[in-house]
Image: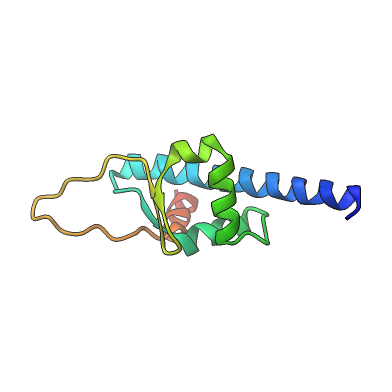
Length: 114
C-alpha cells in the first residue's frame, strides 16, 4: 500500500466520523427539544451521513467511529444494526405507549421547512 493510499483512507475515515458526529449532534439536540426517547433507525442515520458527503458510510463504519471517538460515545447510549439510542431522557407518557424510532429523514424535512 502506498503512502498516499494510507493518507486517503485516514482522511476518508476522519470525514466519515465528522459527518456522523454532526448528524448525531443534530439528532441529540432535536430529540431533547421534542422530548423524544432518542431512538433512531440506523438506516436513516447512515443515509444522513452519506448525504453529508461520506458516500461509502455503512454500519461497520459506525461501529469503528463509535469505538474510536469519545465524542460519539458521549452521545450514543446503545446501538445495533437496526437502531441507535442517544443519551437523552426518555419521554414519559401517561398510558405507557411505546415510542417509535424517529425517521431521520422526517426530522431533516421538518428542519428544512422551518
